[in-house]
Amino acid sequence: AQKVTQAQTEISVVEKEDVTLDCVYETRDTTYYLFWYKQPPSGELVFLIRRNSFDEQNEISGRYSWNFQKSTSSFNFTITASQVVDSAVYFCALIEPTNAGKSTFGDGTTLTVKP
Amino acid sequence: EAQVTQNPRYLITVTGKKLTVTCSQNMNHEYMSWYRQDPGLGLRQIYYSMNVEVTDKGDVPEGYKVSRKEKRNFPLILESPSPNQTSLYFCASSLSPTGSGNTIYFGEGSWLTVV
Image (cartoon, rainbow over all chains, first blue to last red; front, side, top):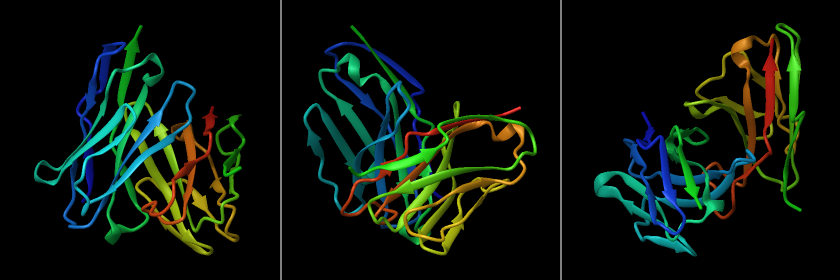
């Protein structure tokens, strides 16, 4: 069965600090897809990134970077030089193609960036 | 503009009074899904649809029904709402369940309170 664990319930940092949000997953499949979403205080959900299990390259998008390590079943998300606007709840999610259509989300990490 | 539209955005209803939350997307996406978000539980998938007339249960389908008679619409039906269905509901759509080749779009959310 698929499972996603975001052990950090809440993180608080001061602006300009770097912060890493952890995501650990469980799956029996060799092919799977991992996602990160952002939910700012306004409540909408924003898709950030999708990664398939065959692509272990790290990805960088501006201040955001993602580190995918199959050996530790982790897909961690780092925000560099955090800003107040990064304050949000961040969700990690997993989809197994053998269970196509079903997605499993972690419980989310609430990030607060203080000025 | 690409979007997923949910209605109503906010609703207070009484136990047992049937209600429908509509979801419509304008991107000709095949895949649509419904989630509920509760404090501390992240997002949990209710139902999903791989295409017209193809629907399947997610992790928490009890008390809900869906239909997919046309590609753009995926309504969520609560035949006899109960207070434990008080939640924030999200509809999502994408070309495929794994989001390949496209972004995953979410509606703005529907706050439902059952008293």
